Image 1: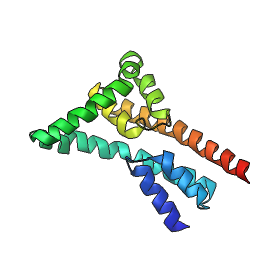
Image 2 (image 1 turned 90 degrees about the horizontal axis):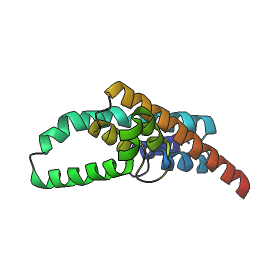
Image 3 (image 1 turned 30 degrees about the vertical axis):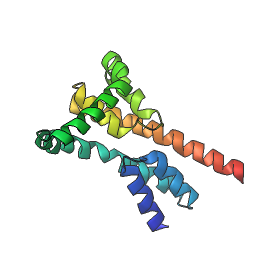
Image 4 (image 1 turned 30 degrees about the horizontal axis):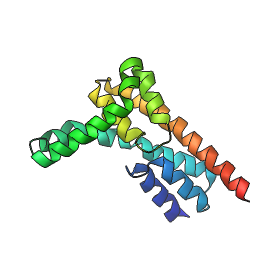
Length: 152
């Protein structure tokens, strides 16, 4: 059970799934429903400071390399397209809405990048991401529990 919780947390930190994958994984493997929510949520929240460090330090260093810069611009364009209108128009609230949608391409990775690109103040961007992550986790958690109950 502890290994399943750790794997769920790794999924929750991963850009390949975030808590949208971590929560169902843990619940389907019998991890306590409350531990699942708490640990997957917290693991997903950890992404924001990691991304801010990456964007402020590592990204700036690697931008001088052509292939990295090309890939970084591609990711930045996708984040701007996905979140751009909402974040530009509604700022903090638009960022919350973008992050809370539990679909691929949204979430804390894209939300962190969007907040950075649109110049949302770091503390406000963090709070918007945390609120969005919490609501997204609640949606995924509830949906997974209802679906599991339906199959039983």
